[in-house]
Image (cartoon, rainbow, N blue to C red; front, side, top):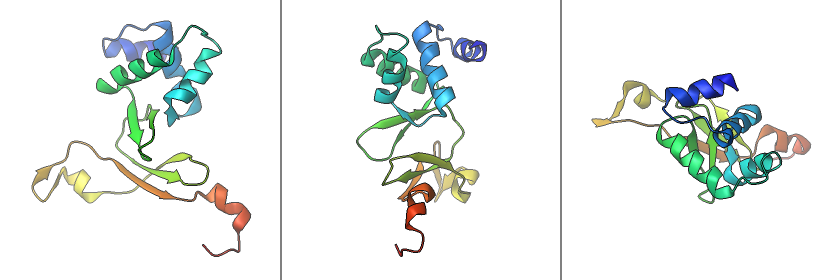
Length: 140
């Protein structure tokens, strides 16, 4: 919790119990969590926590670069603490989001066709290896 407090302090955000719990939840669950998931986890410890508080807290943390929102399906945003630019894989069966390493030469150069690149958002959709396991031998 001390590390979480230092992170919030470094961004001039007051380390309230709610904020620290949200970041602890993301840290322990390794990110890619929806507002609903975070709310359900934290509500067990802080019954007075509202879903609006979780949403607003994550939005303000995203603005200062503490968390990163990920929108793949268009239905919901997921949040993670990994602020290093990277790609994601979305499993269309289990809805799991997995960090993947893909080299993007344009992002490394910082430009594409003369346009300056500030952010990278890349994702792939398919079926993860865990969901494929029971289907070994079947053609996709």
